Structures are given as C-alpha cells and as structure tokens.
Image (cartoon, rainbow, N blue to C red; front, side, top):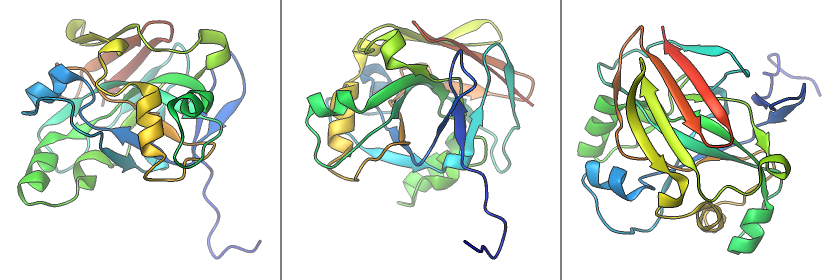
Length: 231
C-alpha cells in the first residue's frame, strides 16, 4: 500500500515479563465508576454507565521498574491524577453478556487518567465535549499488561495512589459501581468491541492536582506499581 505520508506506528503496551507488546486499537474510559468518587464530583446513586475516549497515541507507556516522565500539559493550571485499573481485550463483539464480556479480557494493567480539570469543568459548564480536558498528549500513562491467565480474573483488590509519598487515593476494585464485566457488556451495546481495545475502568475518590516535579505512584494488588513523574 502506497501512503501519502509515512504510516505512524501502532500504539502498543509492553507485556510484563515478556518482550511482546499489546497493540492498541481504541481507548475507552468509564466515568464516575466508584460511589465515593461520584459523590466528590457532585453525583450520587447508580446512574447508567457512561464512557469517553482517549486517542491511542495519548498512551504513555512505562516499562517494568522504570519511572515514566509526563510533561505538564499546556493551557491548564489544574492537572489532576486518577488511578485506574485498565482492562485489555483480545476479542470483542456487540451486545455481549457479562459472561461473554469476561471471556474477552486478555489482561490487566495500571493506568492514570490524567485530566485538565479546569478545562473539563469549563467544557461541562458550556455543554461542550470533554476532549480538551481528557484526550491531550500523554494523558494516559500506563504500566505493563499482565495476562489474565497468570493473575486471574480481578474482581477485588486494593487500588491506591500516592503523590510524593503521601497517600491520596485508596479503595478496592470491588467498590466499582459497575463491575468490569458489566461495563464491558454495556459498552458493547454502544460500540462493536474488538481485539486491541483497552478500557480504563474508573477511579476511586481522592482525585487532586499535581504540579511539575511531583512523582505519582499508583498500585493495584497483583499488578505491582506504576511510577510517573511530572516534568
């Protein structure tokens, strides 16, 4: 195939303990999926799940044992962290049952849904899309993926984040409003899911700002840690 410009490389996430990578097709994110986080954002109850997307090239991959470096993005004075479990799919479909949804999970990783909160807030006020707040360059730092066949199916386990050694977020995966299988099944009613899709599954309460020089350490039980410094 002759291309007018050089074809860009496919975004890919390293696989823990391997030289293989997981090529990424789409990045979906679940909004307000922990009850206490929903409350801190001004919402209550088990509302219908909703989703937004980030471009695949917004991923900032961090290898095992490394500290990733994220540039402080432009046009914001209120950059927030959101620690999340990320699910990688090796198959998909439409209108999946929750049982079928679980079977689509290839593996899991630790991710950060970084947010220009001031720009997101202004977009909300004006009824505009969130892309400027959520989909900017390097807005999705992510650590290596761990195959489900090795770590098992994750329905519970501690999830936390610290900034410069101070604890900021702490919860359990079991506290999701919509569990992983339910989120995948619901999402498959909106989009045809395919191999290579990844899903950020929501963040617990305790989100807040970071500035240049800060180091974030996210952890999920069974998946290790993700270290990211703001440049």
